[in-house]
Length: 314
Image 1 (cartoon, one colour):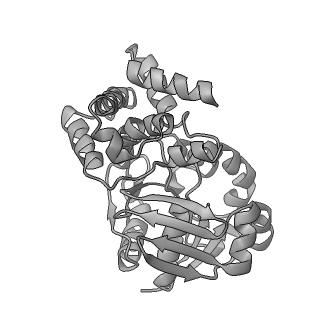
Image 2: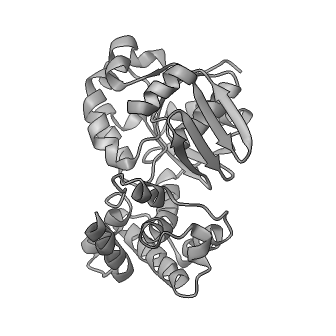
Image 3: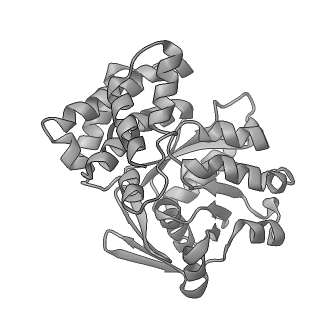
């Protein structure tokens, strides 16, 4: 297979892991980062600890101003965004002129269901690929170093849905083949919005509550009281999906609860962010559910309460 050139915007726990896997397979990967992490990437390269396996690569790394100065968007076959969803709007504003100077497709690998619309506002729907990282936990342990665990699957698809003679269909096949050959289990969905909502069911079920209680996912789902709260928040997310016309079902709810209950005991990204004093992705997770429940005129008491308690801590 021809090596792809991929820009990974955000080389944290998720982006760093996938970048290392792709580099291992011979693809050309450029990273963006900032601060001490960027300096460490430049000085020592990227080190990823994946469940005891160490991946090390010296990859080009830059901040966004250097990206704009040194690269053209069409230098890349794909721009992948693995930033926190709290940064999506600002980054798309910062890179809007640069992105609009080219035609490179943009893939979101972020939490939430509102990133793709923000990207589409800048580059147009025809260039947007929706995506989600499934059954992976990851975070920066120190500048230049990342820890990741889990099956680390990816689901990708044309956002919001494939169109007739959609050029993204062939691109998605190419990406899926390349990612799978790189050791990243990847599938293509014909309904990526459905997949994004199913992941939001899990994220809203465990992320805010883990940040509040400081418990990992297994401790939460197997706890006699908190397990019920997790299920309740997941059920509220299923209800909220109706506002977007996705209409998840009780089966989706039970499938997602079983999935997270049987997953590794991981510290969620929101718990890690809370411990490090970083902004939480509350608005893109719990907030997304609450806004849509308000549109539907239904209450979401579990999500409302946990969200309010976490905001009070900030």
